[in-house]
Image (cartoon, rainbow, N blue to C red; front, side, top):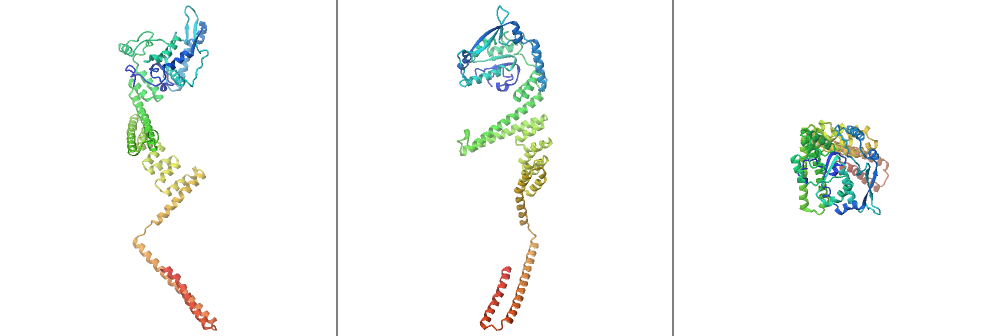
Length: 496
C-alpha cells in the first residue's frame, strides 16, 4: 500500500513471506525507516564491534575465498538436482563473476589480499536480553539480505536509522553507495536507462520482465501458497487459467481467515471477554447482528470461490467452498459425485436429511455418526438394528454400552405404540359388551358355588349338634348368615 508507483506492480512480499525463497534480484524497501527501534540502537553495532584486517596470499584467497568456475558448476548441478526433487524443472543459471569476494579485497600495490574479520570490542559486553529488539531486527535483516541470488538493492528514506549499518558495511567493502531518489529511478525507467555503473541497476533490473519469467515466478508463489502474489505474476504473464486458479485459492483463503476472525469476535461477545467484555443489552444485540451479517458476506465469498473452482474443473475444492459458504445442497451433490462420503454425510446432517446422512456414514462404516444420524429420527428400533449390524466391528464393551443406552428407549417406544393403538369404535363397543357379559356369568357361577357349599355345611352341622342348647343354636344361625354375606361381598366388589 505504501509502495511508490515504480514498485507497485513488482512482486511484493514481507520478510516473513520471503523466508525460504530465492530471487535473482531483491529490493529491500524502507526497512530502517519502518523499524521500531531508535537510531541509537543501531549505533550499538558500530560501537561494540571492531574490524581486524588480515593479509593472505593469492593462493590462499583462490583456495578458500574465491568462487571458481568449477565450484560454480558443482553448485549448479546440486541446484538442478534439488529442483528436480521438488518437481520444479526451472533452474536459474549462475554465471561466474571475477569480482565475487567474501570480505576479501586486493591490497594496493601488492599481490596479497586483505581479509576483514569482525570481533567484539575488547572489554565490551553485549547484553542480548536488554537489546532483544535489536537482535530481532538483525534477524529480520539477515533474512532479507540473503534472499537474492545476484543483487540486493536497499532503498531507505530514513538516513539517520540506516547510517550506522551503512557505514559499517561500507568499511567492510561489501556495498556500493548510490545517491538516487525515487524520482530519479522513475525517470531512468521511463527513458529506458540503466543508471550509473556502480548503481547496481546494470543488467536490466529496471527492464521489462518476460511473460515466461512472470509465469515461472507465479508457479513458485503458488507452491508456497502466496496466492495474491501468484495472481499478480500470472496476470503479468497473461496466463488466464493459472490466474483463475490462484484467484480461486486466494478468495477461499481470504474468506476462511475472515470467517475465523468474525467467529472469534462473536465468541468474545457471547462470553463477554476481550474488547466486548462491557457490552450489554441492546448494544450487544446490535453488534451480534452486525457480525452475523458479516458472516453472510463471507458466505457469498466462499460461494464465489466455489463457482470459480467449478469453472476450472476443481470440483472437490468447489464442494468445500460451498460447504463453508452454507450452500449445503450444492456441496452435498459434489461430495457424492466425488465419492467424499464423510463430507457428504456431514452436509446431509446440517440439511436434516438424516436418511441420506445415515446412508453416507454406513457406506464408510462410521458407526458413531450413523447412530447419531438415526438418533435424530428417534427410531430406536433402527438404532438397535445398526448396532447389531456393526457388532463384529466394535469391542464387546462398546457394544454393551450402546445396548444399555438405547435398549430401554426402544422398549419404551414399543410400549407407547401399544398404548396408542386404537380399535374401530363399533368393534371396541362389541368387545366391551362381551367383556361385561363374561364378567356377569362369572359372578353368577361364583354365587351358585358359594350357596351350594353353604348348604352342605349347614346339613353337616345340624346332624352333629342336635343336643346343643338354644343359645348355641342362635349362634349357629348368626354364623350361617355371616358366612353367606362374606361369600357374596367379593362377588359384589368384582361386579361393581
